[in-house]
Length: 390
Image 1: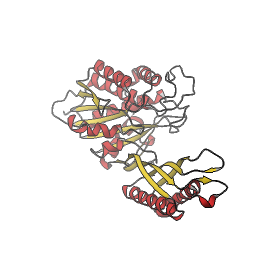
Image 2: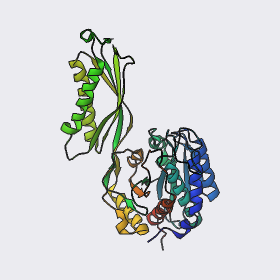
Image 3: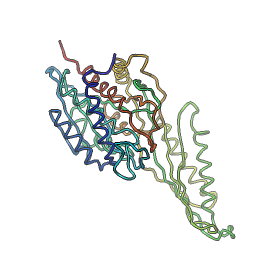
Image 4: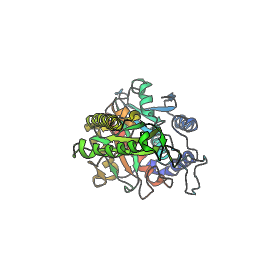
């Protein structure tokens, strides 16, 4: 039970790829350099096919095993995009682009899948096809959905699909997974409260949109506290408020922005209905008008039971049963891998990144020592899921 020897032998090469990607972060779908880097590596490894421009800027590598009895195909997915965050650590490979950095470890995810590609292209000890999926725009752009809509599953014959994310604070050499919901749905909301502006010293002649917005914010907290079953998980957070500019003027309108999250579609639907009702009725009660718009939505990331067990079993082959949590608590963060799981059975697993700063933090860095574990997991998923006969 350990990482694959061959992958461990070129771990420094995986780290070098990761450092190059880290130094050149790109956002959302604008990942042309990253996608080009990935495609060039896949071709150099000897992949049977390399497709670009899937879901706008996604890349797919195809590796066929040396067995000839199966036409099955398993998909492995890594995300490529970075975040609009200014890096603060003085790393030798720190971001060269002001205001952008790989603060979520997608550089590591991409490098690990490239490591698995290199190994699988060398060995080909499986019967079927490994489909290596490099996705853009996970950070709010819905790149997973874009690739699915572009025919990813049908074009490459994917029958099941697997994803992975590093977790700071989880020890190196550990994995965690669960059947069912593992990450939440997310919906961004923008609430506009329109009142009647006026002089702050004559409030009776105005409709104070700031006061109305304040009541809306407080009332929204009752959704999780009083409208959602206490045994369910949900989040409603107002994260931004934009109002007037003067100390003595009541503004005409206020804009609120925030996020709602749930672990089931039923709770998600109920929360939306309650937000709509609260915004409308609270505003009406003050003589104002409330409107709400939703955007940036991802569905619940829900693991399929058989595939979650399989992924856990493969992880156990690498790190041992004691290092695999098969019933980890779900996270209220969201993932657009959910779109892939909605179209094919599969599973998503967490992998330890050791003692590092948290995700989306300006001091975060992917732990290169974690890469051999992730690359080995990818390779063993293919070799175990598509075994050679005889």
